Length: 408
Ligand code: SF4
Ligand code: SF4
Image (cartoon, rainbow, N blue to C red):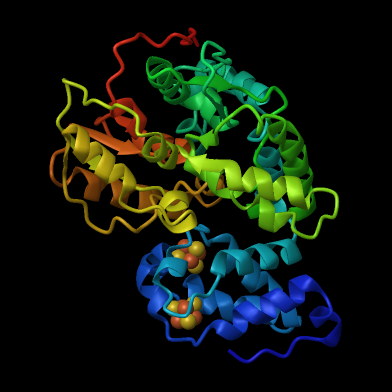
């Protein structure tokens, strides 16, 4: 793609990087075929190729920036287009640059929603209080928020110092409140295998939400805080493990995001290098795993952060099949479920339709349960079907009761 960036923009690292990414696009349009929003609207500007043109115009400061904003806000950042692109266009990074240029503010109700989401979601104790309030007032809560009210409000796991061998387990923000059983179950699985858990007391939000909503400086502040909180555990833990793929994908990117920060670059790269999605850790640690007796047929939904963000494909499936589960076939496994972080709250119409379609494809071959690997997908899908939706770790048998389960 041809670009015509100003000399001023090209003098910046960000301008150079955007220019490089834009120029790698040959506008073949292959990416449109796997873009969920393009499938919904059929509008070129709701597909990656169209958005790439809009981003170029935005950075060159030509064209209608309000139109660019609308179509970029509708993008899920699922990165299916990156997986499909034969030229290796780094769309996610380009979208990040464009969103930072657009900034976090919007007009009217949308702006207030964005402010509210950014105030609420990265703070687990606020989320807990809001979830309590939501449980009491559930009938009056708009649908777009209702799906996020958990049945049980979790408190996050605490450390298990019983073993010499340990991992640093991330509690996450939404995950520790909404799907607490995931980490409780994993902690018990590890305990059985003689592996303990450290918890970073100062762990905060991974920064993904602010990055996606165009506030890079706030995101980088959060990331620096997290690098301080996590790096202190690198000498005693064999890995930093995230059981929420949406957080893991961002933590793995800390090295890139802070590469120009003289003070933090080295520590951020070390944190990124030590960060593993839980399935990578399970494979690396060769854990002794077993199937649950009460379930046989599973539909697997791979979160975009796992398959397109971290490029981890086939690992969970291999693990579930190895212990004896039957995985039912699912159509379009590369397509996003519509959860996409705060997307379900900010773009509810598209999010709902994608959720509806995803559930339909997952249930096509009558699974007994749906398994996934991220808190957002779990809540989004779980709200739309009577079939249970769990984190895949919960399909690995663990005879112990959840040691750290607390009433919500
Ligand atoms: S597939 Fe890649 S090269 Fe082709 S239009 Fe999409 S981003 Fe550009
Ligand atoms: S990130 Fe997803 S929604 Fe956005 S352009 Fe790419 S495929 Fe489409």
